[in-house]
Image 1 (cartoon, rainbow, N blue to C red):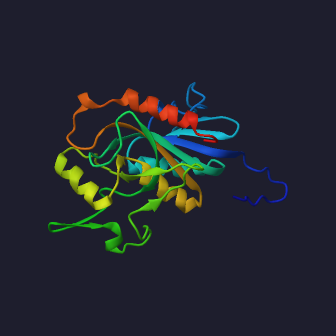
Image 2: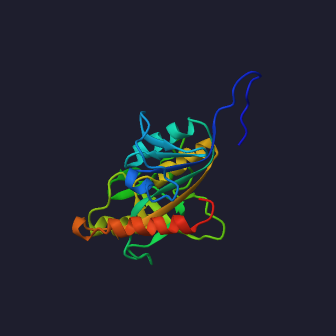
Image 3: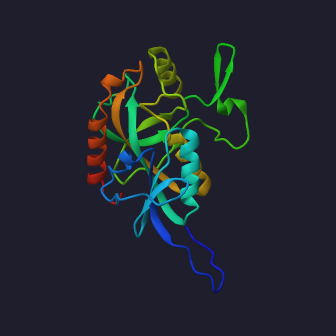
Length: 227
């Protein structure tokens, strides 16, 4: 990524990587998260010499806006999105494990047409991808699962089956596809890693294993070179 700097201007600070997550707890899984108090601003953020860490908040709207703000702060080589996610029953993904995400989709962006669901590509609206499957980057030698992003998290078995059948995703989160759209608009690669905390389906908070998911995510990030 090249920057044009007029004569006499001071080049902007270059941060090679932006690490973004919905919450500080998820950011803290990164082995180089600097901790401490966040900088004052519209989003909680922390910075090192070559990295910007941002807690954007949950959901596609906050995720997209937060990453767009982060990418406006200086030159970025690539984005790493991290966090926890749920896994669909049909996917071969165990709770407590962590995985790279190879592609993203939107679980609930589209329109109802009677009893039929229309994904956004069928609506032919400007400004959106032509396919509801957005490819992501992967660290060298890594494989990944399929992801889907929901504004409203799945809370029943019927919705889980419908979203799995429609998207083919293995895991569900609330941010990944929004990050992918924004990174794509900026022409920047996005990698995404998710720790698995629960099964997608009936909402049962007593069954969530968030601590195990965060531990698995930290182990994955710590064992992956150059993240």
